Image 1 (cartoon, rainbow, N blue to C red):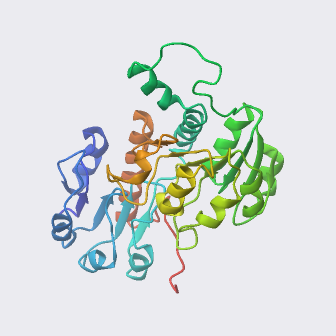
Image 2: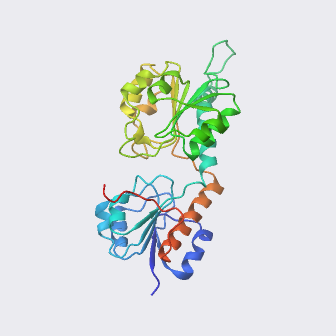
Image 3: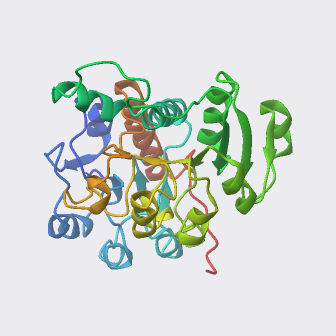
Length: 325
């Protein structure tokens, strides 16, 4: 009998063809609708391998239902949707898909920064609504990007790629990270600063961290109060890193100038969320890695991780945690 695999979202045939030869592959047949929890719970009882997305909460209660599960392959860099500690304690491997989405996400981040700084979405709405009647000196004026100071919170792969793009705009670069990165400081011409100082001096603050218990609500009321009134906050990492209630107040009261957000605490963000009512916020539906080539690479890597784990090998992108936690 072939080992059973469950895939929580419909993937292109060229991605799963190789799996079907050696495994009993079951797959949720919807591309744009997450698998219902009750369906996933039932499927977990029999599977040896699970390929999931960040939309699935693979928590301890779900893991407990999986008597035969050997590996969870997450089609994402972040893995805060999975209880990795519980999985690891049960001998279940967890993998992610780093590297392949670095440049695409950095592109989107810088594009979101430009759109927010120069009020591109506001300008498009202004034109399409028929409000554009003449040119005026201060109409839809935004913030300069060239020569400004960018503060990067979290200098991982994507943070480094973002810094390289900022160099093309002759931006002054500062960063905060859990540990100093001396080699990157020399290579990128980027300066380490404590978080408080970074927030005070940056014209653009870009959040590039994973969501962990340590980073949850890392940017709240106190941190926002440190930022310049002309500052722009960009988040393409995870929504839970920023306190959205505090961010809404800071934006509404013009304590900071604007925000560009690709991620939210709750996804999809409710259409009646207060942040969506503000003109100085650019919002996107979590599309940081959404290029055709990159999404195919992510799916391919997730499948490779899955097959390596089921074959008894150590997957190339194994997520390692401290089991004692």
